[in-house]
Length: 117
Image (cartoon, rainbow, N blue to C red):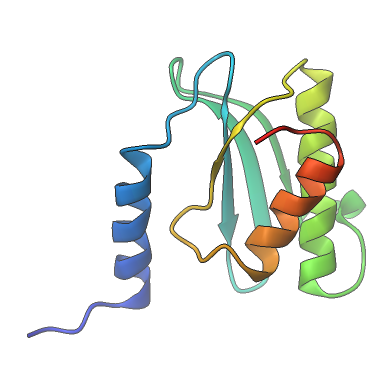
């Protein structure tokens, strides 16, 4: 039996999640992706296939500090941008990653800044 790579396992988990998590115009999907260095978040309307807002640690306003603190900055930024588009309710898509660490930091910061999920 062949061993699965970590990436293949994550993608399999993400596909399984996406059968249940779908973004609409009224309640778009907040998708989180984390690489080894950076954290990315997007608010996506799956009905139209359009990204409404995006934020990442590549931006200068993401903040300083640890990667988890930077991920919190991404959560605050994505919530601010979503609220500017009059989006207050989203569906959270953790992207096949465990709901811990940076993924949880993005979610907690977005909730604290007014996104409802």
